[in-house]
Amino acid sequence: MGRRGSEPSGAAAMRAEVAESWQRSAAAGVSTEQVDAPIAIEQRDLRSLREAHPLSRVFPLLDDVLGQAVRECDAIMAISDATGTLLWVCGTPATLRKADQIGFVEGSNWDERLAGTNAPGLALATGRAATVTRSEHFRSAVQPWSCAATPIHDPGTSAILGVLDVTGGDQVVVPQTLAMVRAAARMAEAELARELLSRPASNAAGSGLRLVLESLGRTEALVTVDDGRGRLQTLRLSPRHSEILLLLASAPQGLSGDELTVLLYEDDGASSTLRAELNRLRHLLGDELLLSRPYRLAAGVTGDWLAAEALLAAGDLRGAMRAYRGPLLPRSSAPGVVRLREGLENAMRHALLRSREADLMAAWTRSAWGRDDYEMWLAQRAALGTGSPMLALVEGQLARLDRELG
Image (cartoon, rainbow, N blue to C red; front, side, top):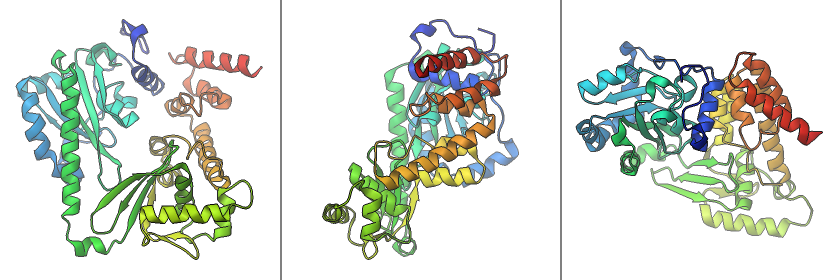
């Protein structure tokens, strides 16, 4: 250890998700010799940020069911927001003093592109529970520690609100720790959902029906329907219903039967099939949500692809990349879906090529949809510079593509 981008002992046995995180960390310019994580929020601003955050409502519950237990085994419970900034760090005074030596303090940011591979950062990057043990940490200073973390989701939108983490010594490296962290996170989500359901009906009714559609990187979309009275229902749609709902969500003014047929089917004569699919979808979602003449959704619509587009339009490429979980309904051949998918993918790609942000380009070239993007590999090489430890990997991929593409 000690040199930037060096590999840990036992790297041959490194888990794939950890190896990918190391690549993201190196591409972002994190040094293995970096001691502290960067401070994102000063102490004077931390209180107001915590009070305004949705997880403040469940922090007492989390501290009760998990915080007390980790204190007893000289570990730390930490809760971050969706950017990786630690809002709460709880432990005994002695343990907190040790954590301070690596910058694991309230207000610091543990996004892996700022702090290197760690469980909270990995959970944010993948959207899944994660463990990182000792030498799996990218920074040498953090390698005496191990950690287990899982995202906490908004029960109304499924968006990540933050990450719940337990950090400690060897006692953390047992399956029971991650199970305990997951259980505590699910309790927090259940409490947030209970609060949502207990809102006065008069307040919720004014907002009407709401629909959240998740289609990025998914063959079958997930739809969450809020009936306007705080009752939520999440459904996994069939591929065809996923296409229909995506197209209607992208056309708030509605679509005629002929327009929808053209957008859905590559050949003619599918009108009767479409009517049958729409009837099944209406039965699934409810008559009050799917209207006809023209076909349209009688609900406020939120979509993960719409969020990525909005962030991109606002110039927040890093946020857009975090939201972009993959191509829109990647296996769909419906003409309208293909047009939407290619439009977003091309916009993301062109923004990346202009950005000169090597770590964001690395996220693209590591993906299934971007691993053969020769132009992106070239741009990534130019953005890295001659001294980067990632250069050999990029050169190797370019050589592979040269062989395969002739």
